[in-house]
Amino acid sequence: VQLVESGGGLVQPGGSLRLSCAASGRIFSINAMGWYRQVPGKEREFLADITSGGRTNYGDSVKDRFTISIDNAKNTVYLQMNNLRPEDTAVYYCNADLRSTPIAMSTTYWGQGTQVTVSS
Image 1 (spheres, rainbow, N blue to C red):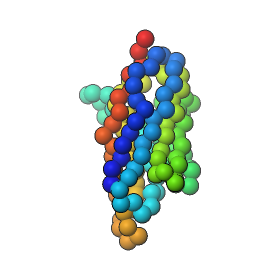
Image 2: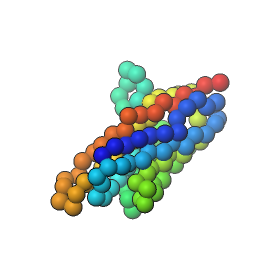
Image 3: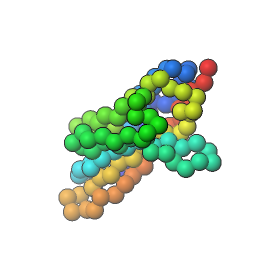
Image 4: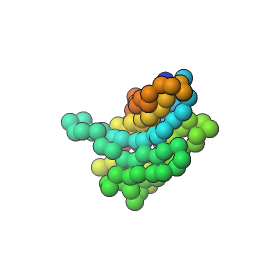
C-alpha cells in the first residue's frame, strides 16, 4: 500500500491550497483517512480525519479554516486549506486506516509528506 500526497507549495498569507492524498496498492476497504502536520522539533499535530461514510473530525487549530473530504472511488482524501497563516508552515502528512484483504486486520499507513510554506 502506498500513500502519495500532492498539492503542497509556497503560498502567501491569506491564500489557499488544496492537498490531495491517493492510496494505491492492495486495498480491500478504507475505514478512514486523515491529515497531520509536523514542524521540526515538535510533535505531529492532528488536523482532520474522515471516515468512508463521510463523518469528519477536526483539530481545534484548523476546524474553521480547513475542510477534509474523501473520494471513495479514487481512494483519495483532500484537505482544502483557506486563510493560511505563517504558522501553518509545516510538512503535511496523510494517513489511511485500511484493510488489504477481507480477513486482514486494519492497519494504518502514512504518506511521505508534502511541504507547505506560508510566507510573503
